[in-house]
Image: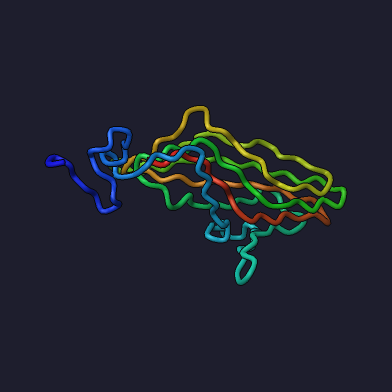
Length: 177
C-alpha cells in the first residue's frame, strides 16, 4: 500500500491489530526479571558477604543483628510498571530464629536532593527451621518507572547462633512498556 510504513522489525502500520508500531514494541505483562544479589552493596561492617565466582550467593553468618543489604533493580525502562518483588534463597536455622525483612524503595531525583520512599515490603519472615526463601511483596499500586527514578531493595536480617542466610537473587515482576 502507498501509505504503509515499515519498521526495522518488519512490522507495518498497515496491520490494524498491531499496536507495536506506535509504541516501539509489544507490551508484555507478568515478565519476571532475575537480579543476582551479588550486585548489591553491604553497608560497612554489616556482616553480609557478597558472593563471587561461580555461585554469587550473598550470605549472612550466625549471630548478626539487624544487618542491611541494598540491591539496585537494574534493567528497567521508562514506562515499565513494577507489580511485585520476591527475594530468593535459603535459611539454615539449626533451631535458632532467623528473620528477614525486605522493602522495595524508590529514589527520585529532585532539585536540592534526592527523595527515598518505601513502596512496600515483607515484614518479618521469621523461621526456626530450615526454609526455602521465595517470599514476595505485591505493590499496592503498580509503580511506573519515570525518568529520574530508580528502584532498589533494602534487606535487613538477623541470625541467631548456629544459623545463617544464603540469598541468591530477587525476582522483579513487571509489565514492559
